[in-house]
Structure formats: structure tokens, C-alpha cells
Image 1 (cartoon, one colour):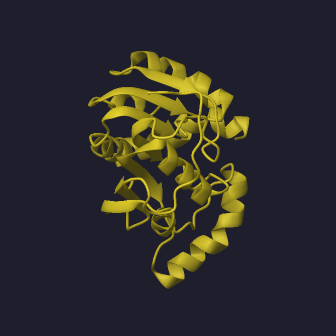
Image 2 (image 1 turned 135 degrees about the horizontal axis):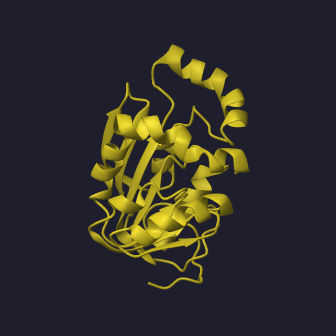
Length: 213
């Protein structure tokens, strides 16, 4: 992620957080429990909102954002450990986490399907997967507008794609979508999903990793 966007992310997001994003995040994160992995944790906007879990491992590839997040990690109501890494190649052992969280992150990951398969691998069978994302609109004309805007938007916002059909990708990865809620004219959606028991769906191959819960 470019340093300009990383350094100014909180300022750019501030008005959205005040207009409802923080409330949406808080409602979603009530579903988190046990040992949690957050992918693309950014500047730590979610950290103050974790209450019902034991620990959060916060994975963020941007060193600038990780440094910014440290103060929020220290003040969080539960232990938070910011770490570097790539969601497409998670450095954790199989079935390490009870819950996996991502907020406004699948839009930017180059290969979201690969990342979701990695999430399935490191999430315990029967575990919870939570997302807050913006998605391609089903309205034909508005969806085409998102397609048209995406190339310029990606350059402006460090790879963010406006037009991803994220719910389809979640299902393609083999996650069981239990509940969705839509916001702001259906552009934004929260997802509560379940990682199926071992042997079902299309999870990635077994792997050992640096983290053991």
C-alpha cells in the first residue's frame, strides 16, 4: 500500500466512521469470539470494538499502518498483536482461529479467492468468518458505472476495486453465508459466515505455520 494513502487513511475515513461505519463495525464484531484473526487490520479502527473475544492477531501488510495501529492496540479492551503478512499466504497453522474478521479489505487484495481459501484453512472447522465490504451493485446501470470507475479508483485508492462480487466469491471459497445486512443503497454489506467442517467445500491444503493458538 502506498505511504500517502496509509498515512492519511484515518483522515480520509473519518467522516464515514462518524456517519455510521463505526456502528456497523461494532455490531458485526459482537459476533467475534475466542482467538480472532483480523486480516487487513489497517490503522486499528476495529481494535476498540473487540469485547467478547480472548485475543486478536491483527495482520496488516503495510508497515506504516501497523505503526499507526500500535496505540490502538495498547488501549484495546482485549489483547491485540499486530503482525505483518499477506492474507493470500497466511503465516499460521491450520485451524488456529475461532473467528476471522475482515473490514473493507477484500476490495484491495489482488486475489480475494486465494485469501478466502487461506482464511478457511486457518479458521477452525465450524468457526465464524465476519466481513464488512463494499460490493458491485446488482442494478445493471449502476454496476456498469462501478466497472467504468474502477480503473481510476484503483489508482487513486491503492488498488481498491469498486466492482467485486464479494458474496459470490465467499460462496466460491466454500464459506456458508449465514446472514447478511446491506447499507447505503446496498453498496456496503456485512456478512456472518461459517467455516464448514473439515472435508466439505474447497479449502486449501494443510500447512503448518508460526502461530499456534
